Amino acid sequence: MSKLQAFTIVSVDGYFAGPHGEIDWFKGQPDEEEQAFTAQIGKTPVTLLFGRTTYEVMKGFWPTPVAVKSDPLMAGVMNSSLKIVFSKTMKAEKDGPVWKNVRVINELTPQTIISLKKEGLGEMTILGSGTIVQQLSNLGLIDEYQLMVVPVVLGTGKYLFNDVKRMNMKLTGTKVFKKSGKVLLTYQPAA
Image (tube, rainbow, N blue to C red; front, side, top):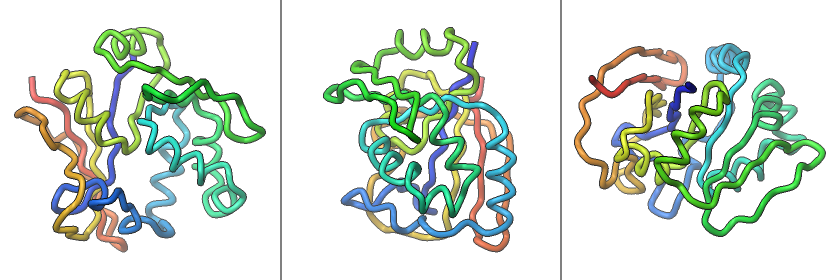
């Protein structure tokens, strides 16, 4: 059975986006240390899960020549990986010349996630998509949380664990990126 992890970039005060969905506070060129980390994780095949909003942002960037030039390894991963989008309104997507392998699921239910885990899709990662993380956290369906903490305090915004019920977590890993000051914290729900 596949493991479901959530990878979310958050501010020090726990926001995954500004009050109007802004993500400019974490954009920028990754340094050498982050590029090496990305290259390492890019070696493992992954199925990417998104909500519609995050999917549209990713689709708007990763297939572009700018993305391919600035981060060719990650662009290759993003463009070729299986992408599952949860959206009540989105229609099926056709493969483009670069952006491929998109499956749209119109209803997010526990049974849908359990079926995906049983499909043997390899490692499944929710990228961003705070509302999907919130829903699946409350259902107890996320096996691992990877929080990339950016050294910025937003003060207001979209809080990652808004309306999520209490959950005890076990720290299973840390990685400090010294130049940028970012810290990757990896947690699993405690037994």
